[in-house]
Amino acid sequence: MSGAPAGKSLWRHPDFVRYWSACAVDVAGSGVTAVALPLIAVVSLHASVWQVSLLSFAERLPPLLVALPAGALADRHRKRPLMTGAVLACGAAFAAVPLADAAGCLTLELLYAVALVTSAASLIGSTPRISYLPSLVPREQLLEANSKIGVVASLADSAGAQLGGAVVALLGAAHAVSLDVASYLVCALLLGSIRAPEPAPDPSARKGSLRAEIAEGIRYVLRHPTIRPLLLTGTAFTAAFAFLTTLWTVYLLRELHYTAGTLGSLLSVAALGGVAGALAVRRLVDRYGPARVMLTALAIIPFTELPLLLAAPGLTGQVTIAAGMFVQLACATVQGSTQRSIRQAMCTPGMQGRMLATGQWVTYGTRPLAALLAGASGTWLGLWNTLALGTAALVLPFLVLLASTIRTLHHVPVVTPSPGPPHVEGEPA
Image 1 (cartoon, rainbow, N blue to C red):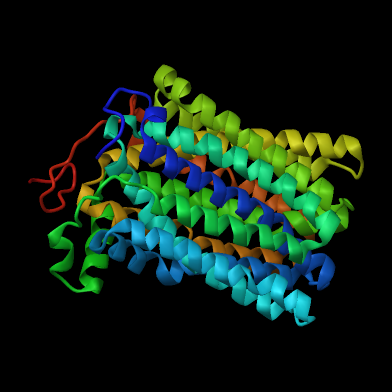
Image 2: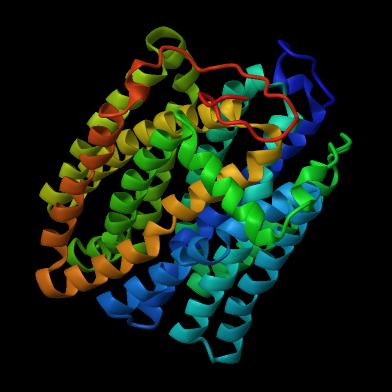
């Protein structure tokens, strides 16, 4: 580990700044695509509710397919080459969209394929990127690092969404995707410029087969008394949130008659909520403790969906929806940063990749199923009824965390595990 010593500002850690900048550029480009891809499907290709849910399904399927192998690979190999190669693969896949549009052969099937490939490559890259952080900064600064990354990610997401709406309005949705292609190239350059020598992978990670390593990671997470309840809470939240977000764009464009620019502005305001949450999380956790902070954030989130359900077309509806989304993303960022810091601090170094990947497999693996369920429900029950059902489901994450032992956690643990064989806290060594 190099750069700023423990206790010093991470802004004096040049490699963290490069890492931080790469995350910002990546998220900004993805913010543009988050606006552009649904608009291509809904407006340019006239996709039905079910076809929009299939696009969401394609984006969210990869965790079920590649999350577990990605975690094992991240623990077996050096992480920086995996991160860099993944962002280049994403850039190459997204380049197919403007090229196909220019050739007059852009189809929904191509969008499904691009969404599937880029989501898989992004997951393969994000697993080593997130699990790389504990080796880049001191463990006692993980909450600070995650907070700083959360701030810039939310700001970049806001700027990307706003920029995406503007570029779509000026040049068309397909051309807006070109900005995301450029962002991946810049991200790869920044990741490649990190100079700190990366710790060698744990030799024990190569002793067994890939399947055995994956199984070891699953057992580790499921037996861990702190990581397991956080994973179950995250799974409930992600499933409900994925159910809702599958139909947000269709509802806003077709039922409330919002324009591309308005959609981009709403997503931009929501991302600013993430900035507020990331800026506040350290003070909140220091004052009230991680358990109380996470429980309060999860209790507030269901109420933030009410403006969407009650709003009518027009400026007043736009303002109330924007306010709800702002608070929602602030709460989601606070609870997400807190639980991520706890998991990273408690996890054995040689299990970081597999711990993260197991969590992604279980948590994000629910998203494609939630997307299909949302598509079916939206088709049969109607968009409003389906969004109301998803809002009710947002109560579940709060109940799951409340029922766990995490509710008594009064501080973020600072643990420096030994580099030996993985040991589960609470079990005999």
